[in-house]
Image (cartoon, rainbow, N blue to C red):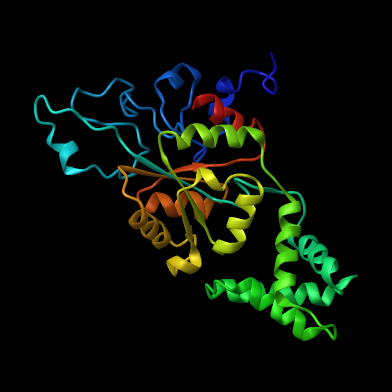
Length: 288
């Protein structure tokens, strides 16, 4: 059986990597004891490879990662029943949940053309320059500012709201979501708190999630404009932690600085999404 067609459980460890090249060990012989997204090998010590001592509650978070535990868990009084560990798992949207089939210049050109007819390349540039400037300023209305700039630069009578809707629709049409992603998210949502953590605006990202039937899996959406800080600043992860009460926090994303380094500094367990090689979502679906 070739590596491309084999059991995805056997290919899991080739999918989820930490930046230094060390794999988060998701080997098939260990998957029976995994709960949630497979970010921890529960019941085995990373340092020794042996099961933890009874009552320690130690898992195998990567070195240097702090996993907060509540005082009740630390006391470990004899005869006390441990409550189940709770996990909050946050996902990036663009490049992780949604794959793009066209670059953003093409998306904007198609969106503008649906309203204005053949789009002048200068209008595309005006929109993107304004959008980037306003996003850097953490403006939640960045899309509207871009649409206003385009409307001001054309002689046509243009409704900025119509432009925003057309641009969002053009983006939705050029994004895809693997079916295995829905299956994995459905399984995770049964036991864990799922969230979105994004630098995009709430309206734009919520529109994509709804269009791809993903919205119901997520209980929390954290956006950079609302947090007042953007990835890769670790402070956005501190803000996310304040929104959800959990024992451990996980970030799944494709960007090395924003989705791996920054969350690790904030005490999250990072899981890096890679769209090359074996299917991340099929492997994750097999594990959960």
